[in-house]
Image (cartoon, rainbow, N blue to C red):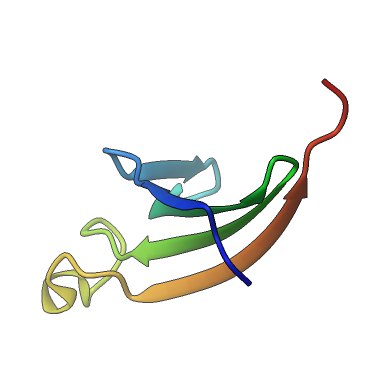
Length: 83
């Protein structure tokens, strides 16, 4: 498979999700995308979700040292529909 170009998009900020339970639960994650153009109508994207501990809920937060503790990788095939 030959790719015409490659570009990467990395959001500048982490995402924080708050679940309103008792007590509230927060999760911190980073979304990382990498796109490969195959032709004028097809893209393949690599999508990674990096999960981080947070100081409020995780006893191992400081031991993790601001590094991701979970990684989820996905591959998405995209096709242009219409004009």
